[in-house]
Amino acid sequence: MKYLYPIVIGTVAGTVMAILFVLFQSKRICPQCGKELPKFRIPMRNLKQFLLGGWICSNCGCKIDSRGKQINKA
Image (tube, rainbow, N blue to C red; front, side, top):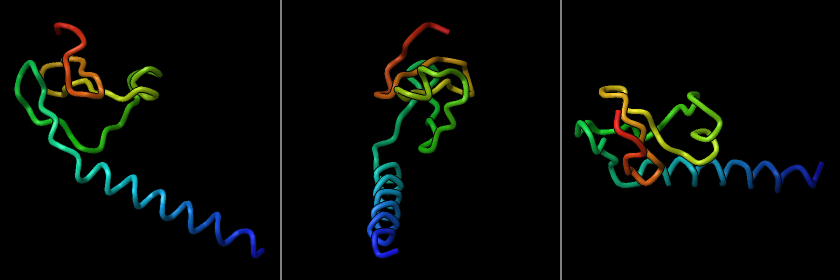
């Protein structure tokens, strides 16, 4: 039982740090239409997007990598 506390504390601290990282990152804007991309993304389009990051713009359908650069012409 005493070994469970460091695991729980580490998990909570890691989760808080991940949320703070997402909240304080710079704004990402779609390079094609100029719409602001959401800070929290739901990567359910494909496995590559899930593992490496990125978005598909809900306004124009442009594929964007995790750095905010256009992957293809939509």
